[in-house]
Image (cartoon, rainbow, N blue to C red; front, side, top):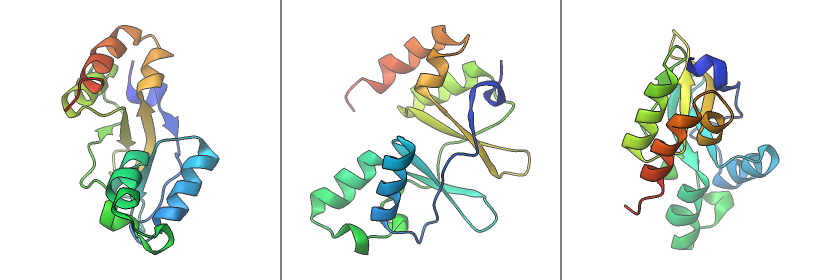
Amino acid sequence: MQASDIMTRNPRCCSARDSVQGVARIMREADVGEVPVVDEQQNLVGVITDRDIVVRCVAEGETLDACLVDTYMTAPAVSLPEDASVEDIANAMAKEAVRRIPITDKDGKLCGIVAQADLEHSAARSQKEKVSQRVSTPH
């Protein structure tokens, strides 16, 4: 089984020059905790998470509509190609202590995202335990 078999295709994304407030709205509308950040050609340049927004922006007292994604995003983003195995995905999630991995096509363009929950809902449930233990461990 590969990333292309379990990923959410064409996830909502944003640009590095978008406002953090706009990204928070995307998260609310799409019910997601991470939004990939892409350039004009749809190349993945980073990710921004709900935690990035809260810890790096809100906790510092910044005004959300004035904050831009490029200041608070994580870059470069950990990503995998669409032909990566679910074991590769689980290993990357565990190693990086992340719950989501953006997926890129053969040209390096964002084409999907795999969340920890996608492992649970696939035949890769056994891999989810590995990720859960690592992601849940305090840093």
